[in-house]
Length: 151
Image 1 (cartoon, one colour):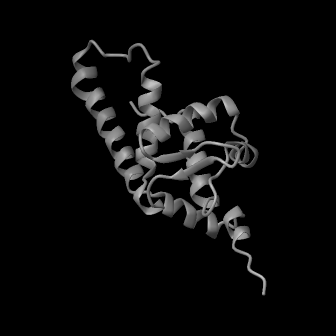
Image 2 (tube, rainbow, N blue to C red; image 1 turned 135 degrees about the horizontal axis):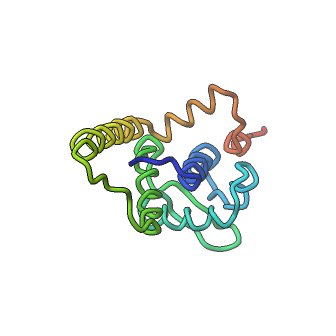
């Protein structure tokens, strides 16, 4: 069954931060930590998994950080949630399995259906959508500051 974990929320905030604040230079994890208040121990584990699955690209070195591996409009919230769910599921031993007819024939299918509806909804929300929402809500972006030209 779908559970929105703390790690999933941190991953969504981190990737949305990269999408919203990154443009020319990679976004450094310490900047994400500062802006989003995500503990460093969660962030590094999540970021490495997102790099391995092709959602992010990592750049090493003192000026290193993270870029989106694809355009904002091509990455969905559902993709990010699935990556973290997979990471979390490796640590979960077993899930509850009902032993009753009511549970296996009625309740479990209902929960599966709800889970699918949630994931379908998340698959229809892109990082571009989140960035547009942030702009509408007046969230300040570091990428706006990078494009200051003086003549």
